Image (cartoon, rainbow, N blue to C red):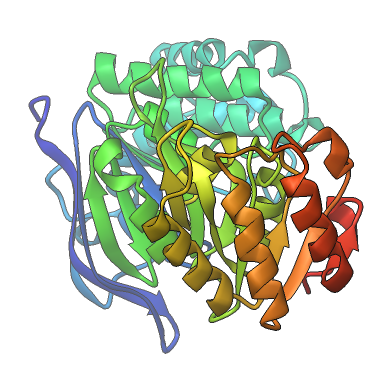
Amino acid sequence: MRSGEPALVLDSVTAGYRDVPVLRGVGLQVRRGEVVGLVGPNGSGKTTVVRVASRALRPRSGSVLVAGRDPYAVPAREAARLAAVVPQDLTPAFSFTSLEMVLMGRTPYLSPWGGGGPEDWARARDAMVATSVQHLADRWIEELSGGERRRVVLAQALAQGAPVLLLDEPTTHLDIRHVLDLLRIVRSLAERRGTAVLAILHDLNLAAATCDRLVVLHRGEVVAEGVPDRVVTRGLLRDVYEVELDVVTDELTGRPSVRLGGWRPAGGGHGRRAHVVGGAGRGAPLIRRLAEAGFDVSVGVLHASDTDAVVAERLNLLRVSVPPFSEIDPDSAREARRLMLEAELVLVCDAPYGPGNLENLRLALEVARSGVRTVLLEQVPIAERDFTGGRATELWSALREIAEVVAGYEELAVG
């Protein structure tokens, strides 16, 4: 097969266990020299795809081609020459040394009475060197750590020399150094040997940084596929993983990166909404705490360059903002008032108050008097934050008389 041709093709595959369908009409391709990441939530069918592709689970319908051949139409020994598998479960039923395990990768090429020739031993040795397990040759496999065992099984797959390599969560139990080593080996196989690689990966950042393409499974169906920057999006995280996370472009790789600094369940609080009056970064911890507690969060009025405004933008929250260093205009004030009145909870942070954001305190006081639950965060005395000649102190004091007051984020009851 020439480089770039499809080496693995699943066409409209439906498969499952007993009477339970797991895959429904799945179609995907992996070309020679390509590394494709198979991603998706737990239970979406990723391991079932690997089992179907490796001749371990016959599909109920659809077709499978590996290196141009139907693995279910040839003897098992021939099919084993087409695809090598690194499975999740790496514990053999019997005790073997690491060298014996790697030599098993040559089994499809041996005669029933053959014990392996010079080429088989050379392939095994090269594979162990490539995966840095040559020093483990005489160790029993059950004595190895999870990471060492995984590298031995990867060496077994390399020794097999198949045109298709199937990896089921290959980085499990590996430290960061060996994760990078494994991915380097996989990339080398694709580029130098033209191996077609399909790898199940749970780490979206790792998948986006190392794979040529991604295929996303959700509830047994392919819901997205393509180059990483078109697949790893906020919409995907919301619709498939049911979380709201920020996706940015990594400055070094140019690939998408999921930012884990603040998250919230997709769909928010199903009608529960809190409004944060922040500023100068004082609202950011509250914003994240409320989002993690299941609230839909709105914020404002904020100045566009403020830290809280940046956090709100990254989390794609409802927000009202005005240009930097400007005062709050009437339209922005009306929008902020509407968001506060519609909220279950209004939280006013101990931000510095000056002419540019004094209107926030007036709005909060009005909303508190209307009966909306209002909480003041007061870690820094208002006297140290008042840059309005005393007007902010007057409003804050009036708020204190009717609002709840907490001294820290941990005291906030949001359950």
